[in-house]
Length: 151
Image (cartoon, rainbow, N blue to C red; front, side, top):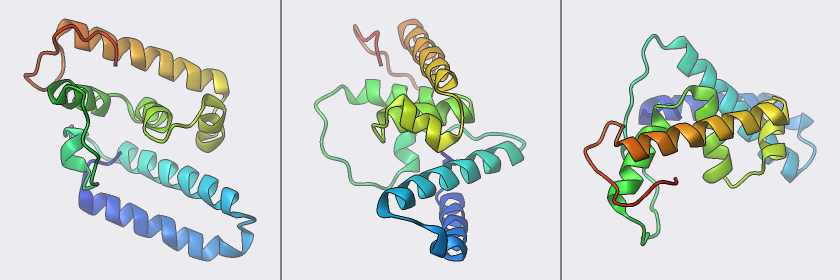
């Protein structure tokens, strides 16, 4: 979410320092996963809000994770990642939790401490915006997906 490896490392350090201070309060593995997601997302959103400008970087450049080969169109994926990066922080968090972490709207609402209907609204508006941008050829990359209308 912060699109900078060093900022992400600083954020991870902050999260684990908070975890260390509150480790006695963690009730189970499930609670730990929930707590880590919630604290990480809140700290990332707070960091993005503090920054005066947001640097938009394609998702591929922001991740150093080995991904399995995909049979989908790599140009479409690059455009889609660039468009997701342009979403506001809260909407981007909802989209990433839904489609990257595969959480359902109820879990996302609990993680982000927002109403389920707000999560659904973010998803609906974000998907509409992504579809519109893909259909119109918008975004920060030069790729043009042939026949792709749905993210």
